[in-house]
Image: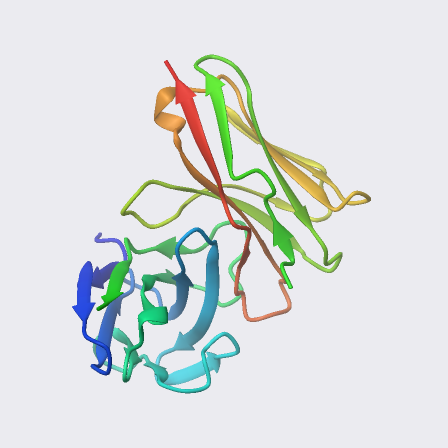
Length: 116
Length: 113
């Protein structure tokens, strides 16, 4: 039973390019959360998705960022026209439940995005 | 506004001794508090949690204490082992919300052999 799979592990983009980060949740998990960790900071919530639905995007920047979790395939976090400030580690977590309590999340190993 | 704060960026402890990691929060409506451990280049791994209706939860070498009046929680690791060296994050959530976690900044624990 594979864990949460994120790819790529490392991604380098030039300013102005697009970045696509993928997350395959654990088998049987239909809830996906994306978090961002800037250098020297904690993880910050970005967006919560269920299959084909965005449930909570209160942590997403208003521009350039979008997320989806299609019926088939992985969840995608897309960053258009990247800037240096987007350089961070992006983590995906999945859960079999909504509102998991007591540690019901499983995190992936993250994608480290570097914008040059 | 930082609703969950870990004011100590780092902590160094001798192997076999107790490690105490602290966390403060500002919102009394949080329902659950969780501790995660993170190694470099890996995702956070769940350690232990506590409901806001309890004041202590224990799991092996790990114990979490919650002081609601002080809005403070702590993680005790006894005895500390070199393999415990990692970054520890405190997190909180509202059970009535969408389940999103609010994390502190993290404390780097170094356990010296």
